[in-house]
Length: 267
Image (cartoon, rainbow, N blue to C red; front, side):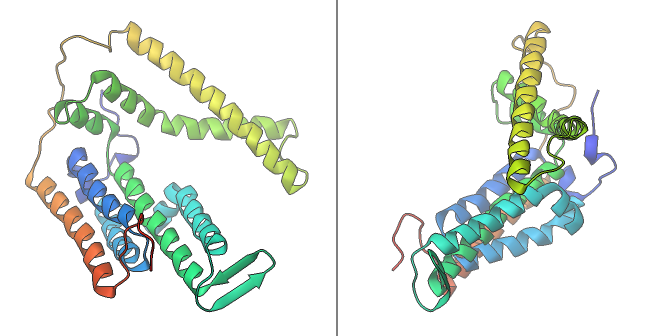
């Protein structure tokens, strides 16, 4: 029986595309962003990605709800890069061991925008891709091993349960007076304890699921498919769109003179 989860009722254009085509398109954009840290290529890719979100049935509110940890991580990474990088050009802030200059600020902004431009496609991809369709595409088109495909499917199906488990553990700890009061340091330690509890629960759940799937014969044998994974003209447009966005980001940076490979020293 097919489970639609959060995609039920979502008839957005990208929802109907083959998962592998979307993965390749995301890979092309990510590859370009991984080659250079600069404001222009990251900004170009980020603007293009935000323009694609309505095609996946997403809004900025849903984007924040589903991707806020990645957004906060990208902002923190940009700030850390800005204050830890070597100074160059005009100095904007100098407080003890922390200083931000024109060069370090540009590098930090580039790092933050690149992090967002790499993370947001993952949010978009998982928001418009049904896990069962993804498993069918990985097994039928990519010819990946069945155990890997079924493990991926199980992991995607358990993401929602992990979120619910986090809330349950938090409520149980607050009922015992843990993590609901105290200094910020005490609350941070309580959060670490809650994270460890979630990790233990996730490992136990994954172990039980693996044993159950092995016992029911998921690990071998000749397989048949309830649904065939197919390609369509829409998938070709998705691939073209990914290639165009990746090329536009690279060409814009080349035109602006900001492009440089990450393993080469900027000079």
